[in-house]
Length: 77
Image: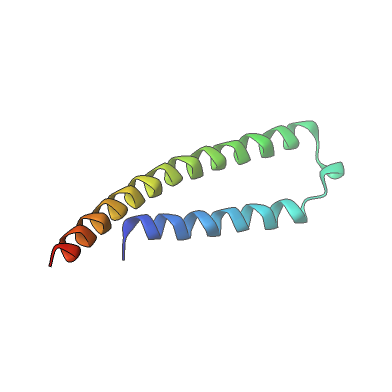
């Protein structure tokens, strides 16, 4: 399985888990420190997902380039 696809699947799962967790949280019950910690955690997760997305985009560029090369060779025949 392609590493980019694995990262993409993980990123999708991670995003869904974050949304689910946030839906369960009663923000009115959190202390200011808890809200700050949650915000910091979500920002770290966002940054990690953005880094993974960059890797997936690089993989996609490589796949697209390979596809174009194969298409050019196929047209010549």
